[in-house]
Amino acid sequence: MNPQTSQRVAWLVVLAVLVAAPFIGLYPVFMMKALCFAMFACAFNLLLGYTGLLSFGHAAFLGSAGYATGWLVRSAGWPPELGVVAGTAIAALLGLVVGLVAIRRQGIYFAMITLAMAQMVYFICLQAPFTGGEDGLQGVPRGKLFGLLPLQNDLVMYFVVLAVFVAVFLFIVRIVHSPYGQVLKAIRENEPRAISLGYDVDRYKLLAFVLSTAIAGLAGSLKTLVLGFTTLSDVHWSLSGEVVLMTLLGGMGTFAGPVVGAFTIVGLQNYLADRVGSWVTVIIGATFVVCVLAFRRGIVGELIAWQKRRADRSAPSS
Image (cartoon, rainbow, N blue to C red; front, side, top):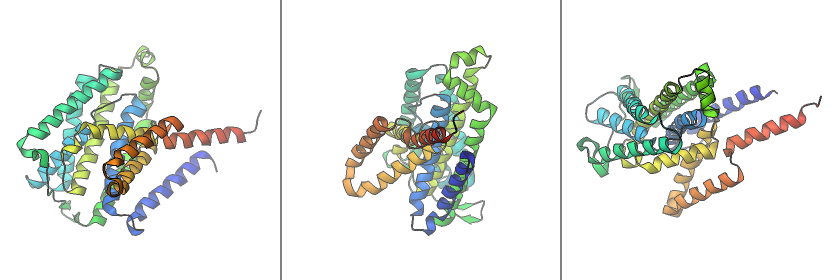
């Protein structure tokens, strides 16, 4: 079996497991939360893994979309689909504003600008009267999708979230494999050479930033509907650190890496929260240190590298 066929078989097996998850004893709300964070990590990986831009403020886009969706659905009476679309659009618009400010800087300067802008969003969410302050937005109803599908049913909601996740994942795969995605990789590898070839790298990076923030906003909007609330923790800088951890732990610059990283971190948080309390952050931090020291490419990155070494050894020598 060639590598491409084995990859497709592996993806079909993963999809089959996700479809069967609610029927084999996995808690649907946990799975939905993990899928939302997997979307968030995939959005961040599009920016860091394929464009080479490190954002320390990505939680601002997830959280702002979550607040927008929560308020529109709960207070304005919007249907859930319009609330999600509006939240995603607001995150994309905020990403455009932040991107126009930050995109002309590189390295740590870009990261610090995104962090500073995210802290401004956090302050707004803390002080604005419609966000609920430190209590957050509580009691957000799921409603009915298109007036037909009752999202109050966890099983229905799960398959809606799964369908959105699969669509987003395939969308990112298409972006990376498109000519535009190849330019992003060229910018990541050698930006001066991309400039010398005539590419407007700022325009390419800005579009990547907006796409990443829009997908992060979509994840935040769905997360608010799933859990029925959104709080300040969704716009806090620590969540931006968590998505960096998810991406690096799973494997930066791979398609499956952010998904594996997100499920690992969310799973550890849920499993250990009742057992070790606040020590869960220490355990996750230690896990990250071990990952950096033992397998720098991340879980999926190391598996891919091992497969390549194995294929090279088995290939007939000329």
